[in-house]
Length: 340
Ligand SMILES: [Zn+2]
Image (cartoon, rainbow, N blue to C red; front, side):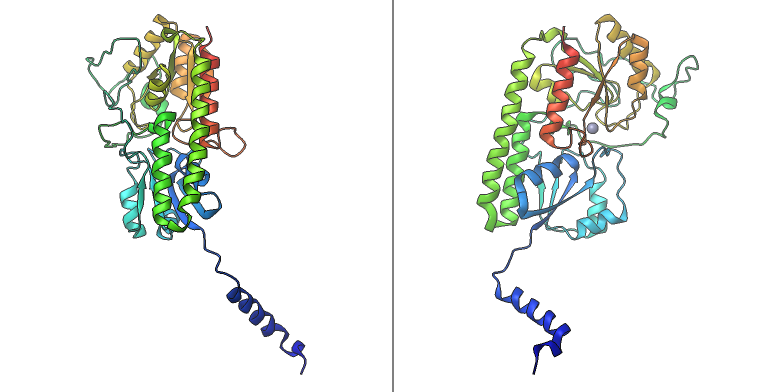
């Protein structure tokens, strides 16, 4: 009897026999990261042994994120969850609950040299330079300064009450602290998938070296810029770790959360400081509404120096679509804007 008689079922049979006869091809480890920067690190370290997905995507603001039902589905199928920690992902506990996720979790920032943030809902200066003035009174949300655009109008969103911890979560902005992230992620992958532990370790070592090389080249290039001139105005207080790494003072209009609303008075203070200290490096951020920063630039006659990537990578092709690309982009733009 001809085999052709069984054409259709025979094809299925021979395929399944083939799969059975071949050595088992391990499925890639399903890793879900809370936001795009961790997602990229997981891909760098995990290579083709992981199937990586992300909850807060490129250009997404993790501070104000609200998970969708599809995120619960993504998390429910994960074998490993990678988060930042330091109270960055305020929305995560609820998502974990709705997803029923009880699997292992890597806290990437675990063990970093965490920075405390000095004040809530107010701009904070970091690094070298000026004395801090945290003594002024606050009247958030009660400003009715009709002569200017008030903070409320500019932000254009109702105030969210966000509770956050006492430590600044944005540690990935320091290449030194990023080494801690790389180690934690590598160890987490190895623990979840011991068969490929060596693979992850090797890739993590190579990746850590590339991060270190970028760090060294930034330090070398910054030497041409006097420390007292390294002052930058940004939207939200995401760059304290970067500031500490490179002796740059960042003056942020908002607090550590992009949801904190500065009062018109807070904004006026930054404008005053920018004029007094001749600060001409002013940047918008990819995850924050640019209007407040544009207002400061307008009123001080400075030009916005471009976009810094704070809490998320850029879209593919932006140049900031990887962690290393983002760090290179940010430091290139800063060095350019800070030239004497
Ligand atoms: Zn942030």
